[in-house]
Amino acid sequence: METNAFNQKLNRYVLGDQIIYTGFSSFKDAEECANKKGGDLVEVSFKDGNDNPDITDEAGLIEKQLHFFVDAGDEYKFIHSSDPGFRKYADELQKIKAKLMQSPPDERYLTNFEIENTEDPIIVIKNDHFESVTSRERSKYLKHAKVYEIGVSLSKS
Image (tube, rainbow, N blue to C red; front, side, top):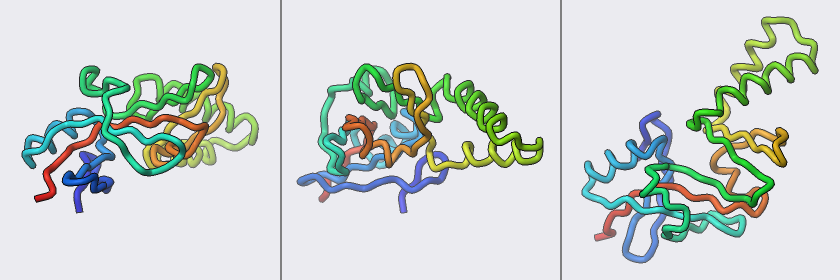
């Protein structure tokens, strides 16, 4: 089983004569995998709410050295757990949730634990207001989003 830098399982797709791996925890993680396996970095897109990838260069992930990007239109912003602003949003969400629940301090730590341990969490912002927390995998099926991931392409033979 192939894993990323955080020991999470990579996704494997067969496209024609290529095997494509996605799910890397960083651009550097994908680069290291490509170098180790003799593969090439590729940008992969998931569109129309499905899990069927296409190789593309629409988001410019390789040039920007990004591993993940979601485009769901101007009103939506997807903040991945690796993005610099994620911690700020997560901290604010936990404060809001604690206030709403009027929970004692020990329960606030459990709330903190929930957000940090969601599988590859992504905060969804709509029109500059919090909408939800989702996972990287589930983002492919939300809001008619175009999800772009860095991948490693290997020859099937």
